[in-house]
Image (cartoon, rainbow, N blue to C red; front, side, top):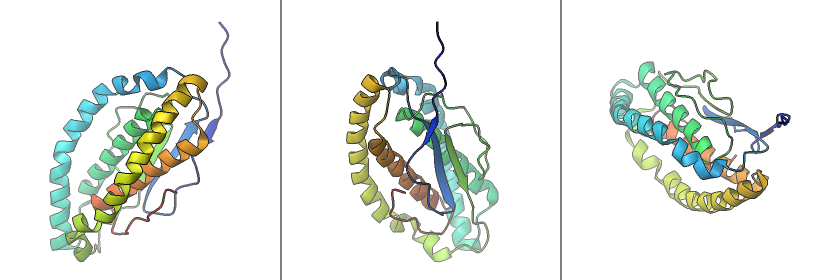
Amino acid sequence: MTTLPPQPAAAAGPPAPAYPATLTYDLPDRVARWRPLVHWLLLLPHFVVLVVLTVPLYFVLIASWFCGVVLGKVPRALLNYSAMYLRYNASLTAFYYFLHGTYPPFAFAADTTDPGRDPHVRFDVEPQVEGRSRLTIFFRAIMVIPHFFVLYFLGIAAAVLTFIGFFAVLFTAHWPSGLRDFVVGYLRWGQRVGAYYLLLTDEYPPFSLD
């Protein structure tokens, strides 16, 4: 049996913009053709873990909100948990969208700096602890509504492109770069909004797929 040489990694679209929460990808140019058929099934254990992690996230968000509004700061431990949750979710999402073929690790490092456990996905945050904006934290759930509205329609477009990408990978083992860049941009946008909503930063996220 011959062994194929490793495929070079391909950057996914333009680099992420200078925002306190950055989601970067290092994706292979080719993906095994059978991957789109089973990715969702392989992720079932991870989905169970993600549900378990979501329960304390609600309490972390409530505690972060009260600390931000009352004290003007959010304890680092709360920010670390939120960053860990977003990082773990980003790792699962990239695999779910069959952007690569490496099974995501069960990694739960509660830190805003990515420890590098996932070779294809990296999420880092420059968290704000002190000097938080009490006003924007108080109205945070309202301030993200425009982003949620736009992401809803972008999600529909991403779903359509993923459907096309499914057959593209199935027959060619290759994501069309334009389609993949849009999906990656959609995921980056959602990740920045998630970081803002979970109070990791007070900097309003850009309306951008970059």
